[in-house]
Length: 427
Image 1 (tube, rainbow, N blue to C red):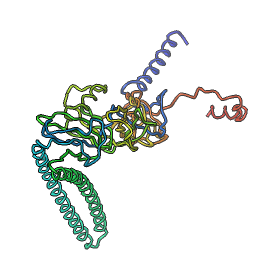
Image 2 (cartoon, rainbow, N blue to C red):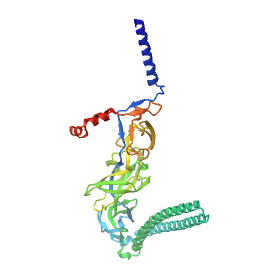
Image 3 (cartoon, one colour):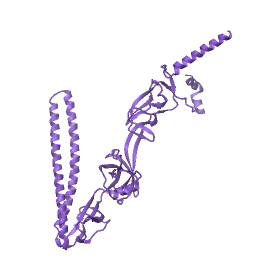
Image 4 (cartoon, one colour):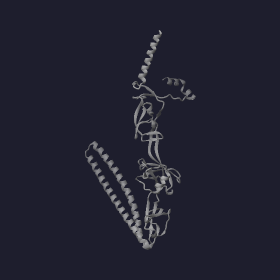
């Protein structure tokens, strides 16, 4: 073949290769390809939790105030700050010449407590009436659907019964809480009555509760004795928007000086009202690292330990971790591998049983150490890959992974046989 023929053949071959390259590798190519991906993960189950660490203090479950007309009213203090007292115990003897002033304080307290008692009794009565009406209504609905005699009606009866049980539980819980508060008010009222019934020549201030005398101080023109209840829980604060993350009944891990071991607890309550400025808030602002520009954005959080902490002194510092998210037997994937993530939803790229990379919608409630915890959408054993490696393909490409680089041991060679290794490598 002459020189011109060789050149012509070379040009034709080059054009053929170039055309095929354009058809195969251009952005508009529709020819399916097998894509090499060098990084992948196989889904395995695990337990994950997202914790919110907080500083906390040992605090009384309740505190009661005893008001005294003025300092001249007191003849002698019978207790001091830090002393334990019992309900009805004398905490100060009164100056008989000025006992009438204190009597007017007691009468004001009695009126306030009686008004509170009446309000609580009225609320309890209303709730009991509403519970009875709701129960009767649910029973009527159930009977009405039952008379239709069809299969669908039978299903409706079951739904009504469930609603009835749910309402009953809600009413019972609210009534129990009000009855507990009413019982406390009635105990305080009994102490005030006992003080009013004292002999004027030998009158004394009595403790309304069992507890510890926390503070004796002036409050306006009057004296106030603050008594902490003997029962203790832990007090911390949700700062800024944290109140949205912390919910009642969330699990809490607790560790503190004076405790032999770490214990668990639960969030008892989260206030939706900013905490008033007091020594607890001031102490928290000093020891906690989470500073907030808004001075009002501190919301009281009460934590109930699973074990008694009465041996710890009030205001003792504790470290708590509130578990705000938890997933058992869930899978996780690298967070940066996900696409179109919005709130708790995202798109993961996985390899299906035919070896193609497909996109799946998944549910991702939280992250754990740069990994997204998946509670719905991915199964144990599935293979996930980085979406960035495959975004340029408008279809689901076939995928192949790198060959394992680990060489079998000499014992494995001898046991399995080199013929078998060659066979599997060939196929």
